[in-house]
Image 1 (tube, rainbow, N blue to C red):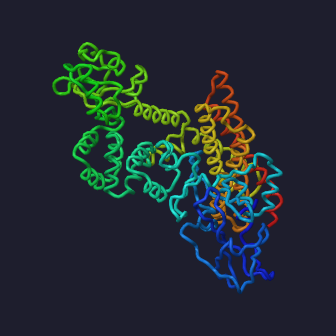
Image 2: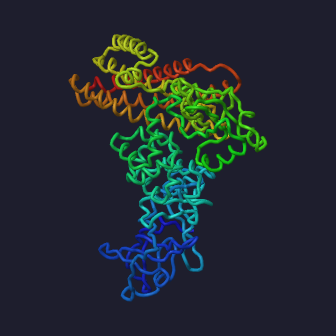
Image 3: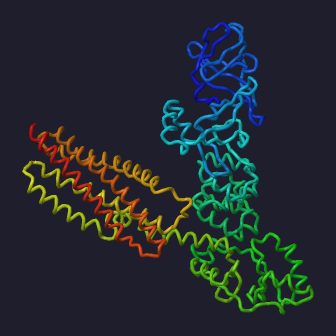
Amino acid sequence: MIYLSQMLGKPVVDATGTEIGTISDVAIATGEIFPRVTSLAFQGPDKTPFMLSWRKYVDDFDAEQVQLNVAGPDLRFSYLQPDEVLLHRDLLNQQIVDTQGMKVVRVNDLKLSESRNQLRLLGAEVGIRGILRGVHPALERVAARLFGKSLRENLIAWNYMDLLDRDLSHVQLSVTHKRLHELHPADVADIMEQLSATQRAKVFDHLENSQAADAISELEDEFQADVIDDLGNQRASDILELMDPDDAADIIGDLPYDKAETLLRLMGVGEARAIRSLLGYKEKTAGGIMTPEVTTVAEEMTVAQVIEHLRHEAAEHESIYYIYVIEGDRHLAGVISLRDLIMSAPETPVADILSRDVIKVLADEDQEDVAETMSKYDLLALPVVDETGRLLGIVTVDDALEVMEEESAEDLELATGRRAGAGMRGVWQWVSRDGWLPVWAVLFLVAAGLESMLVDTDMTGLIIVAAFPALIVMRLAEDFASHAMARVIEDEDEDGRPSLARRLVTDGLSGLAIGAVVGLLAAAVMGVLLGAVSDKAVVRSLEGGAIIGGAFGISILLVAIAATLAGELAERRSRAGKRVSSTTMSVGLMIVGAVSFIGLYNISFRFLARFLLFDL
């Protein structure tokens, strides 16, 4: 096996043994399952680029060099053909979409194989081994020995890639058994959310309007309006027309007024009227999430007439699990289940199978109450009426599930203390959540003052100033506690959860990285402050910065490890049915952060004060 990263930069030697250049790229023909290398690109003297036919001129090749079968003067150079793709230029370090794993990955290397004196592309390496190999092959070998099977090759085969365009710098799609247009809209949406706006637009160019409408409906709310806004007005309008009115109204409501009015004017009269009617309702209410597309019949009809009506006039409606019976000015008189309709004789009057005890909600009722009502009575749809009992629309089960998911996420944020406020109120909540930080600030400043009285140095300012990074340590410790509690509340499947050792490593590295970055910033600020008030400004500021930055980084590392262990203990207690206290975890981790910072800070300070500061 040969990797592209190993070939790049290797010599190209002609038939006389003269080196005429170094490999810069290779081209493949895209029409084959495992495409063969068709052209060799190399740099000659003065970095002049050349390209020649692989089949015609390459005599032998390996990971060290390419041997040509003619002398340099006899070479005839060629050009890149329309069906050819350069691996280094167009694929290496580019993003592709793995539609089996529903994630965006980056091509870190490309794997080739020799077959009958031909070189064929097997696939793209998207794992860590490709990155290490690109740095140096020896680094990959060392890592493979250290980590063994855990550092396995992660290869996406070429025959699972669907090239949207010859210019692969936009987007490349790797698929397993389905092409993009054959995937479920929810899967397409998962992929789209991982792409940039430019890449999403490129993908939507290759979807039909109906497929695009289904995919947009499955996108998260924050992406939907952006996608529509990036499309041309006519196509955006056509796509919104194909969507369910409630979904289209949600998107229209998030667009700028001028854009929204333009799209509504381009729509059909009926579709625009349905969307405008929904825009008048408040958000997070039954009216805000309902669809006006309701299957209705009259009480005077028979079962046969209702079925005929469903086959023709109601075929496009979102849900026909229930058929609603109206009278007069759309006054809701009753409901028929689809099961009762099918089980009844064709000549049976609707009045005989009608259920007049209808569970319904008002248009201004809170969406969470609507979802709870549907869950309580096991309903697939719930009618929405006004104060007079006039039928306005229905809330379908998919909308109720979205509401429950949204409310559950909000409850999780509240339970873990991660819900952000707005403006200055949000900033103050970050600084003084639950009233802990003011208490810690006073206690630490008192301790710092006592320390400055006991230590016979002129570094009192450094000790007192260090109280502020200590507050940041405790604030981050509280966030680590919230993160650990979130894992407990979410109750992640044990089989899919990483091992404790792996979590200790990843969380510890994350903590160290956070500590290092914030510690450097704190050290820089402290250094400037101390340098402005100290006689030995430069040296003292560097030493003070080293004390604070080092203590900060290590203390955050310790907090991260402690949070992982505390979270593991809390998960075990929760699974055993025992009570878990988020307050206890927060206090404990804040104590760990404070004690570790103070301890490390004092050790460093005493060392520098004794051996360095007072000898200057």
